[in-house]
Length: 166
Image 1 (cartoon, rainbow, N blue to C red):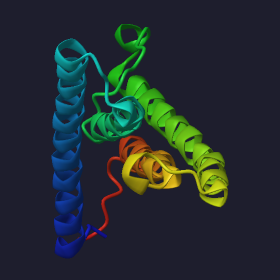
Image 2: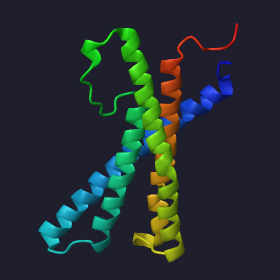
Image 3: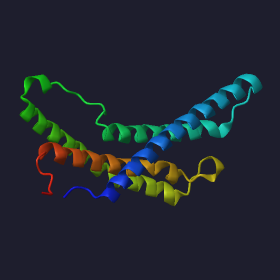
Image 4: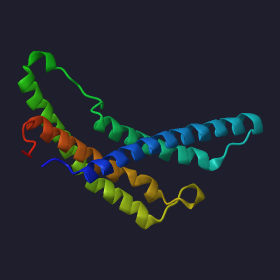
């Protein structure tokens, strides 16, 4: 059964949201870094909270970027056998690799949730009272998103004719 129009619309909205968030966070990170450089060079004083905030922005940027790369099938891949196999065999291996990648990502969701829970219980905060757990919540969320994307692509690759419908 093909996805409904509302599911496709929701997926498109999420993809656009991912891209807007990624670009916004990169602009924010670069701006904060530039501001820190200006303050250190011209006033001889750094802003204490910028370094910590930038580190957490890097986490968000890396995982959002990985999620987008997974969506577009442009993630890092080691390919040493594609030229030695027939397209059919290569496709099956690609499907299996996608499913294995899904398994790894989905298995990482639980420990990532536990990690975030630990910081939630500890009550630690970043600058401006931003809860530390909130900045780290991107880890289980993006592992789940990437796991689902790998899973769907693996199924689609292994079973290309299984589209449903008429």
